[in-house]
Amino acid sequence: MIKIHLFDWIIIYSYIIILIYYGVISRFKKKLSEKDFILSGRKLSLTGFIATLVTTWYGAILGIGENTYLYGIQTWFIFSLPYYFFALLYAIWISKKVREAGHVSIPDQFRYHYGEQAGIISALILSFLSSPAPYILSMGLLIQFLFGIELGIALIFSTFFSIIYIWNGGFPAVVRTDIFQFILMFGGFILLFWFLCIKIQNPISMLNQLPTNYLDPLGGNSIQYILVWFFIAAWTFIDPGFYQRCAAADTTTTARNGILYAIGFWAIFDFFTIFCGLYAISNLQINQATLVFPNLAVNILPIGIFGIFITGILATIMSTIDSLSLVCAISFGRDILWRINNDYNNKSIIPFIQKGLIIISIISIFLAYLLPSIVELFYTIGSLLIPGLILPFLNTLGKKENKFNQKE
Image 1 (tube, one colour):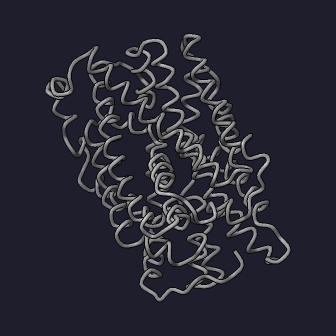
Image 2: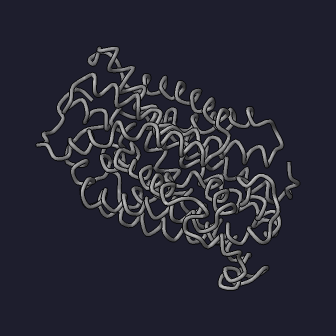
Image 3: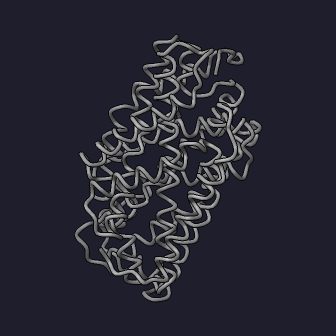
């Protein structure tokens, strides 16, 4: 546990209170329909689309720091470039098809083309593929860093906090809080980068003084290792978060342009995060590379600015945990439990999604504790589960679509 000034604590706790208000309290008086709960009534604006997509894909912020500290600019070639490429393909080729298909989820699309059993199997795979486990681990490590508590307890606490504000608010709560968290995540790292430039040296001088191995795109690994990460990035095609946002967009233009704008914001954020990680290589000596950014902030940022930065990291991670927890809960609760129940006329979907949320959260805590490396979690989950879904999903896009008219 580190010593944090009272003013920084006030900023951190203010963020938590605001998040609870917008995610939980403000939704108590409004009862959501099932389609509102899952897709915001298919009225997601361009602003909401960009904010929720950009923030959702950056929960592994501690993993970015870990990999940059260990391998330098390789981080951009495994965590940035591949995702730009596949996101661009998604925007141009897939986003319009998803919006026009009228399905609620990827398992719905599998069910429509391949049958009931295929829908359930795809939902089961997606429940693990989009697991929030790596991000719950990130949040747990950050809570452990701030409060000095045992990792297992920190994981439980981070999971509980993330699910309470989507329990009743669903996707509208995710979008509402992500707009707020979008501002925090960018603001925090812009401030850290600024103070690094002022207190240490300018970025060009810093790069010139780095050992050459940190400027190697391969980071000392083989080209095959980099290609595996490109393969993992292809999961963008079957990412339930991408699918949900495109299905929820108010128009096909919003779905396409929202992704294109998001790529630009990801590139900007990558610049700040990777450069901050590169500064840490020569100016920070720590044993736990996962906590590069928090430790760098402790050494560089003044009182108040440190609190803003920590809320930025919290916002970056939390915005991903809530989104992935929800899409996993939808996959497991709606597309497995509700479908197996087979009583579409008399059973509300939302209680099944809430049951799925509990089950997925327990599984995610177990995975995070079993594999306490963020990068290893990505590598293991991605390389094992992606192959079974990509080609069947892409095959559905080439088939003639009709509006999905089953009970949603």
